Length: 494
Image 1: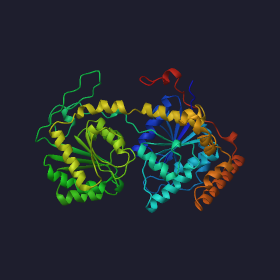
Image 2: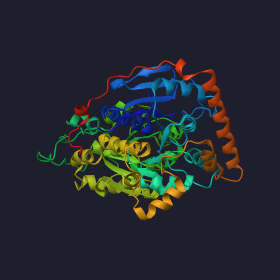
Image 3: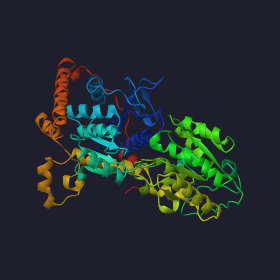
Image 4: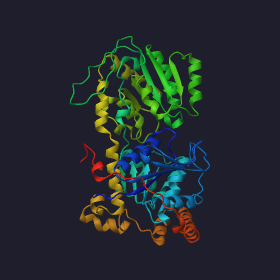
């Protein structure tokens, strides 16, 4: 029987805030619970949401009351989180701490404290960062600190893996690529024409490969084509690019309109562009929307435009394709890995190229060259959260020793000696303080010494907590009933 684990997912980014990382954590946690594991979430408090909350399937969320600074990230305190974190981990009998997102302070602190407590740790990176500007250098040094003493790293795309390996000076064998996924049933194409803004012809319906494909949807030469954009309105999401491109696209293609959903500091630029060009009747600004409303917005359109300047994966474009939208996106980061070429039109992250690519997509739809009504079933067969959970479970088995080192890391006998000499027991790193200090000391002439000091202080705090707040004084939380072996067996998964 496969082992089960008590897992703590830790990140600053979680519901009720919408986003790709938030959705990833929730969906992965739910599927791991279906596999028989116990999962809790540790995140910061939101307005009206503090303390312990229970979500679907018995998923428990700890909203810790820490001060939030920029973009829902808590103020980094390094050590003050430790007493509360230790209490939660011991109450829930956690075996593995799984942190998410490079810019999450809670994630980095939790991994440091977990290693001090002798727990296995995993980190998932969802973002791409540069190497030249001051903010990226600081973020990369912070990542180097955290990943110097982590058991395994997961990235959501191969481009993200390459970026993370370079930023944190990791051995590539320590990094696995496990993509995001979508719940295809939540992103079905419109089943009737009234769902699509612009009307004109029967809407595509969902189908299976065992059934005949639905008829191709014919677009008339004068039918209005709706272009949908759903994004956080920040610089890195390409909002400046979008602001410059929208008037030109609408000028070049009279029978088109935009529906834009999202919020952020760049929303004022979009509103000013609409005012200056008198586009109120052709550009609809919806403001922030909830994740469960995304599908209802997407099915109003024919094309999804994604002008991001940097992206590790881009879950939203998979959701758009699942809804039957033709995707126009910038060719940056891990985006080219996400969807097959017949679903997308790629553009350079430049205004002229984005306008040209959008025009190409509009022309292809008007000429009925793209079978968007087939996209949903194709996406459904490509992406599954059950598959993501199985692959993540294999990572847990690898770092806990449930599967052999050679099987997990995929090296042969010839490489075993050099690998073990470098890592000791690969991926199952020593918790001894002296071994941890050796790993941190190599992080830089000055940074290495600072990192070692942080680890020593963290270890002293741990000894103090063990002495003054002994473990036998902490109540153990009763667990929800877990899935049985028969229930864990999912159809279509070998």
